[in-house]
Length: 274
Ligand SMILES: NC(=O)c1ccc[n+]([C@@H]2O[C@H](COP(=O)([O-])OP(=O)(O)OC[C@H]3O[C@@H](n4cnc5c(N)ncnc54)[C@H](OP(=O)(O)O)[C@@H]3O)[C@@H](O)[C@H]2O)c1
Image 1: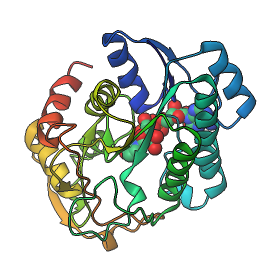
Image 2: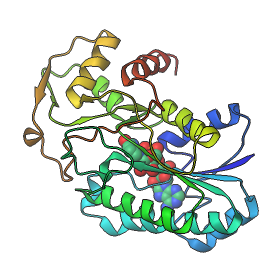
Image 3: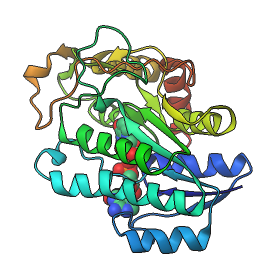
Image 4: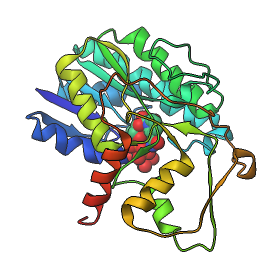
């Protein structure tokens, strides 16, 4: 089976591709320099020439704060780019996997979001990713939409590495009133493989089981790393950012991924050897 991955140089792509190879897939890695997803002609040419059985679409505009002032670029990449991939997947009879986000939800729920719950994004990034979902459903019936959240991995700028780099600050304040599901890129990659092997087409939540706040996440990172920092909880209002974040974006994952704490423990053990 041949799999083409878009955004293969990104944080997820770099963990996903070797895992797919280990699973026996022939993997075609693409990124903006050889497959700019916003150019329909290029998408058609590359996908037709490679003729994959599956396209895993990881490429995205992922700067949540910047998207507030750069909506057009975020929309072009996350919505139009995804539409291009969806249309050509259908043309070449390839299955499509689209990686989406918990930020499609508004965070007002009191219980974990189900894949069938109504999205209502509160920032531009979430809105453009939702437009991507709509395009996938419209143009590529043979699809999996995998919503994930609070992603971290060894190959990208992420919360775990940022917090470790700040450990020596005299005081480290971290937001305690946003609740979500931390997810390791390796767990998400294994979850994608599981969907391809076992699941019907549709929308799934592929994130760590359980939930925590950013403060709780940081506390666990430091506990597991034996770091003694002066960590203090704070409120979202004390840490203003250009884009609003949902207060509660916990997603029900039907046990596709294991508990976020045990995944984090593995990540922290492995990163010592990188
Ligand atoms: N990170 C998170 O916390 C998070 C949470 C939920 C969902 N997600 C989703 O998970 C997926 C993977 O995220 P990630 O963190 O791995 O993202 P990432 O590290 O930012 O990687 C995205 C990749 O897409 C590439 N790209 C950007 N524009 C492109 C274009 N026009 N054509 C082709 N490639 C393009 C980027 O290249 P450049 O670096 O050169 O721009 C980058 O290599 C994304 O769909 C994202 O929306 C992420």
